[in-house]
Length: 523
Image (tube, rainbow, N blue to C red; front, side):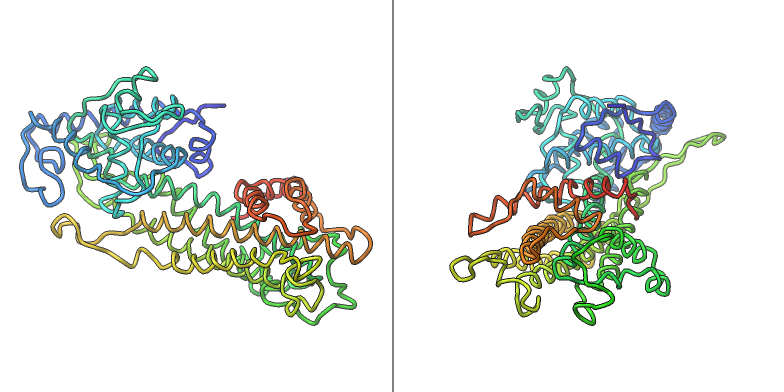
């Protein structure tokens, strides 16, 4: 696998995914090394002159007015990591930790943080050699950045905390030694630069947003299968309808849905339609799914800027031509933008689950599908309950989403004795968006599971294998390789899990893209 060269300016969601999930190796670009060295020279120069610098020659937060002697600068940074490592709750997965690490590394590569090259090199080596700090998920207020989780991430760099190497959990110093690395002794500014920023929010948000992009198109595919199962109409996808309400992603969604069902024999004959109009959950897919695409596109836009931003405080500026470096204290660590984007994403995905659950229910309820299928798609209703509880689970998850989608960003609790009097709660927004994402993947998978069952029943009723659309046929075949038609009641959970994996891991979308000749994802 090729090495990903980080320069602080061009990190994408796809890059974060490759590093986090595929262990793509990383290195710093030569230009980044040069910027980092100059930034460190600036810090050393300022220290020699006795300049007062927040977090370097002062305490932190409410303790900002307490002076720290140069002789204590290193101890100050080590104390900072230890005192701020107060995370609680479930531990982040390996891929989440790697996403956070590469996000922090790319931020430091901007060259405004004043750290030595050795700090960045150790992060590079930890990623490439598979040293994964143990990081609890809870404890960040999203300003001053993700202090608690990043402190846990940084502890093994100084030989403290815990890390996992090749599946084995061990103390931080042992973890480094296991791969031939040694702890650092931090110098002035370095502990603060490691923890004062948005890497938890940006790294995890990148993974969530990437998966949400996969999910929104997978929901299109699954919704199209349900449309076919219910003998719906493709007329609502007509380009002319969307041209006169020209929201770009609504138009993209309608075009995609049209491609998915192209050539289908299960759709309503436009010359002799089965009904005058389909229910909203079928005919309004472009309007609803397209709006969710807008939400996801905004999240990508926000996160790709954030991943390539300098987000700690203070920042060091020493541009070419400047006689002396300048230290600027500000608030680039504040996660409000990510908090709002992730809250917005959670709301959008909640709506995707809502409409998917309604289509699922329409497949199962004879009153809604006009008696086309037996109750709950069971061949012998009563003796067998069929897919009854599949809808229960989908309804439970859709309802849970409505609680999780309450915006975290509308809350704030002052901290550090009122010095940090407004915080973003962006880390909570990210965690909730991740939960909503997983719930919605499960709901869409439940619809997929039921839609395939209904399609098989429809074919049985017709006495021949009615042809699905170009895209939906590919999705159906993938599902049937893993999940069978159910002629009688059985333990449903394993089949639900298989359908979920196909949705969450993108296999459904990949198969359809291949069938449609690698249709590019529209953002």
